[in-house]
Length: 281
Ligand code: YH5
Picture (tube, rainbow, N blue to C red):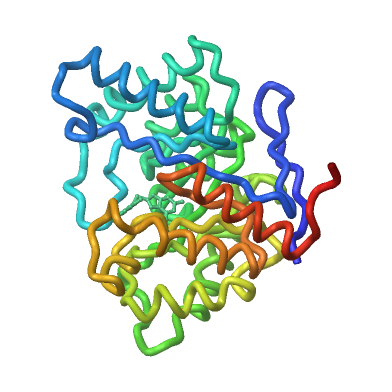
């Protein structure tokens, strides 16, 4: 069911994907995401949140300036840099070795983030936005998470077909830019220009979305596909989130981008034991 992938990271490190689920912790760095105690308090809160997620078992920390959310007000490049770069620098300076991904579609932000110590690019434009994005990733030799987000897609075609076709283009762009095969991770992009029925059709089709044998990342945590179904607020969506991560895991997904590390990790370990048997001793 789960293919094994050894993804090289800068500094002679490796991100190993396989039967063992990989948890990515979401670190939002936005003016309103932490109490209004000024610049320094905000940085401290971000560092503390990252450390808490690492203590709970996060394998990757995904840092975002929130310009990527569907419907979010676009953030200027400078504002995004001012938000994310100090956090990356502080994490590295305080000895964090957990790989850091940068959630941005802006090549300059990706470039600066990698230079500050991030080792994975998380592009919600699937390498199909700014052409420089693929070049930056190739230049630094870092892995890319390429997410499906097609605001102009053919609404008459089944969503899974659309996502697979979009991935073919992403793969071609990555190849042409010189991104190594082993450095590409695909993501169907839950909640990004998708109807509720699209999100669930995609989740149910997870097994068929791993185009070309690339590993898949799933980002469903607390999203409205759960809230619309259950009629609840983001903070009450953990049980629903876990249903989605386990369903995706059972169909071969490798990486789970979540807010709540420990409960998702616990559930996914039980799912792993179910599919592969409990780990020895
Ligand atoms: C993703 O799926 N999503 S930002 C609305 C919510 C909750 C969460 C309350 N970046 C993804 O997390 N990167 C985002 O409702 C992402 N995959 C990848 N690769 C949106 C988000 C969110 C939005």
